[in-house]
Image (cartoon, rainbow, N blue to C red; front, side, top):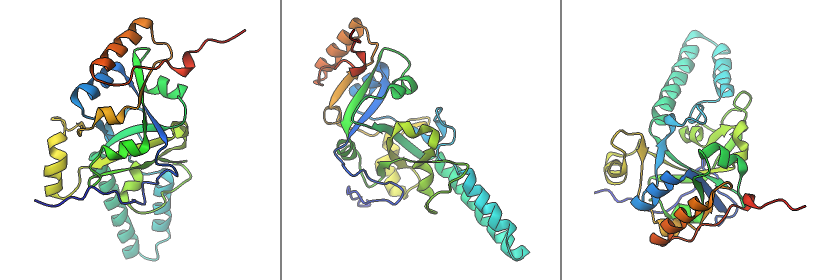
Length: 260
């Protein structure tokens, strides 16, 4: 059996926050929160199945334009063929890896974000988990998981900063900059023994997601109710949290009433 070290090593594609104790948030419908708590497993969706941004894990147009430029400027047919072959290989790798990235997405912010409530929950029966970056790090076997901040670029103008294939899953279009996302990424393209030990046992049968075990009590620092949560829903969440020894839910700071 291969020895897998659970020690974090900085990866060039995963920039780290200045403060690893920074606050992070995960917004979700109550049903998903129940699943997390009852199974003690953190669901990580396959990148090619994301429905908010179809560009996840793909190549910026500016990068493709660069390859076209060097192809057009090739000094002879052989050089041009080599460049085109290399570009086709990279495109193939990109498509293959995109189907093998499994991602957990969090927002790094000191406060709630109205856009995240609207974008990642379906209504008032939802909650936000508040945690810490370093706490999230501790939930993963870092021999197979990378975690870091997402970098936002204009895909029409900006190329990726390097050739490492993982840059594609840690960059997003600038339209999503308000998310201030940090993400944990597991890549199932790895040595067979590592895959057999740490990935296959936690993979969904249909391959759509990866769900490693986590300590929910450690991960969940606070549970925040949706800004428009009803008193009935608040009571339901409170009962659920009490049963599972989690902190009682906190009303959203956005739920306060205006003064006149």
